[in-house]
Image (cartoon, rainbow, N blue to C red; front, side, top):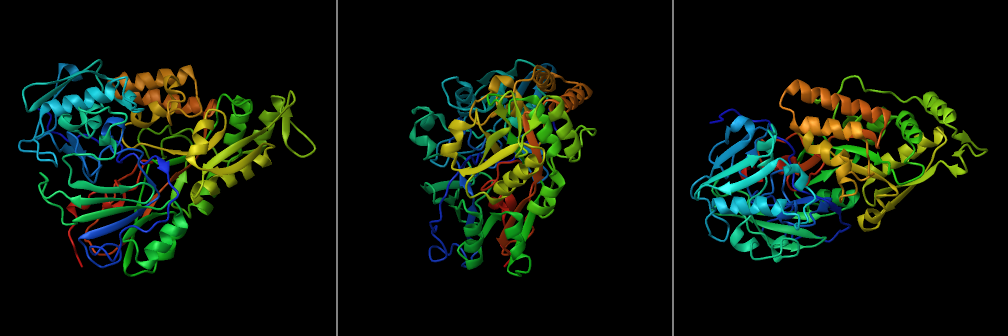
Amino acid sequence: MTTRRIKGAAVAATMAAAVAACSAPTGGTDGAAGGSGSAESVVIGVASEPDTLSPLLGYGKDGNSKIFDGLLARDADLELEPALAKALPEIADDGRTYTYTLRPGVKFSDGEPLTAEDVVYTYETVLDDKTNNTAKSELDAVKEVRADGDDKVVFTLKYPYAAFPARTVLPIVPEHVAGEQDPNTGAFNTEPIGTGPYVLTGWSKGEKLTFKANPDYWGGAPKVKKLTMAIIADDDVRATRLRSGDLDGATLPPNLAATFKNDDARKTYRATTYDFRAVTLPTGNKVTGDTTIRRALDLAVDRQAMVDKILDGAGRPAYGPLPLDDPWYAKDIERPQDLAEAKKILDRDGWKAGRDGIRAKDGARATFTLFYPSGDKVRQDHALAYASDAKKAGIDVKVEGATWEVIEPRMGKDAVLAGFGSTGDPDFGLYTLLHSSLAGDGFNNMPHYDNPAVDEALETGRRAQDPDDRKAAYDDLQRALVKDPGYTFLTHIDHLYVLDDHWGDLTTQVEPHEHGFASGPWWNAEDWQPEK
């Protein structure tokens, strides 16, 4: 039996599409919600909402979904601990077989018992090619999942995969409900049933999601009886509504979180993250697909200035997808802004400056469009700073704000100020970000990056068992990205949250890019204890 704790990975529910909405949720006048001073009903302001609430399509795949539970969960330190399983898995066959025994007496919120067949159904459906789950490559190692009686589930892997237990935070759905529907279009996507501490009671798209405590939750009934997640895309509006008492808490950018510094009634929480901002450089664009242009942009950008001026120090320069303090980070890839070198390599490759200072080669001007999602001030500021730095090297970047509905069809040709990042094992974030087999697969590998050396390193990192071999592979990958960048990595940002000071001993986790309902100091709202 494996009894040691296992390092966790990404910590969030999928929060994909930005939604421009300012409608007030049910607040302080209903059930002692926002601003009422009650610790039993909480209204939180977040920037976006999920596309779906079905784990079969990716919702909650990294844990903390609140409606659901996985076989395992993560604690405050991201260590794996039992959830629907009553213990960590038994590992056999040199890491190719994992056996989980289910916790007895667990029921779904409709009263039906959890069985091993529900676990089998969940994993098999996620892996089914007919299911529109763009994260299924994360379970590539799974060869078979089967039930052994009502309370045991056995996973057989194609190859030893050291990070596999962290993949079993995937939420489990009831076969007796979801199995009767099309996983892509069924009502379960918006009317989910799970085993988690909260039950969805309503979802007004673009406005709010409301949840009530599950009184029969196997982990104990939560003290916070009602949760409302208000969807407010605009940062300024979110801060204003928090200040007015319409919200009990909110996620805020650094400049707005700072305005609550002297507010004795509220507390600010800061979570370090793997969340990075980067510019995608599509290979299908004549300018951004040019390796020399990519390398020049990488040299032209002033990352430290972005941290200081845009993030007000709440972040770190990003020289690649992994943060500076990550144990998998390649220590020799830091590079300061070097405009002289950027101009030199452009000149050498035939990108010559015209009278207006913008370079051209073979009749093509060094210009391209960079989109950022409207309402996201932090990304807008990154985009403008990037364009300013690029122009100093003779590259004209035209910055445009747009909705994701406008941006998504153009991601293969136009650059995007994007955000990614997964905690834990490097395979969790890097494979979907960079592997050529996932080019253009939703938000996976948005620039259609294709580098055989990087693909080889990703496969080695995923399959190798020796930690030294894995470290060498990921070091090679990071160095390859310096020579042939598919993205211009800019900053790793800290997440800031402001919350009414009604609860004691709240914590944050190290967070991935995705954050909102599942992260911040409310990552474990089911465990909160009122203090005031």
